[in-house]
Amino acid sequence: MTGAGGGEDIELLRRMLARERAAREQAEMLLEDKSRDLYATLSSLQGVVRELDAARRQAEHHSAAKGLFLADLSHELRTPLNAVIGYAEMIAEDPRGDQVVEDAQRIVVAGRGLLSLINNVLDYSKAETGKLELSLQPVEVPAVIEESIAIALPMAREHRSRVLAEVGPGFGTVTSDPMRLRQVLLNLLSNSAKHTKDGVITVKATRLGPQDYRLEVIDSGRGMDRGQLERLFEPFQPVRREEGMRFASTGLGMSITRRIVLMLGGRIDVRSTVGQGTVVTVDLPVAGPPRMEAA
Image (cartoon, rainbow, N blue to C red):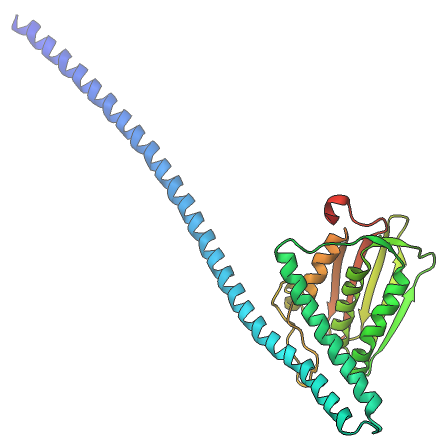
């Protein structure tokens, strides 16, 4: 009896140990699963924290850039306004003087520069709210080039630079927004005029085939380094001012230019070498942008 009872006790202990072992193994597996889940959650949270930190740094960067932009903007608004007022006063004081024509031309240059600056600010605001629209119609590209050069020429002459036009053969009518196309060329020409001294600025128009055409603005100016090229299309990132430079940048022109080119269904590319100059290439569709692009 005792031997039999002892055997049953041992068997009972064995079963109890087996259940405990199974329970412990199950608990360890559950703990391992929970640990993996916790690790995954922590990793995900760390990723979110990194993204939030990056977003915070980017927001701080944009905030600082906007602050610098507003400071530059106030300066750039004053510069042409002071020129307009100053030369107008000189004409008023000596209306028959030898400098009347030259002073009047300087007023035109300052006025057009001011208008271009204001247009870029307003268009950036429209683009940010999705209200920048196109008015598509038949356009004679050579005529737009001629008009754009006529407006930008006084600024180029301020730096003793020439502006040339080269229009390839077989250039017919295209579908585009003439005002926006002119704005693109003016922004590009203005940039070249600001940074090209005693040089040449050339506007080229070439048909790439039945579907596309190319506009190029080529200058022999001071050029840009890689860092400047990487920031070229970012808003509120002005090209650095040079000593004695009369025309500076508020950092909106190229941002607006890129937006307009994309709206017109095209693409823009910039190549530049410090000390040698810059080439901006804009490829656009002859038939205009797709309907969803123009909406």
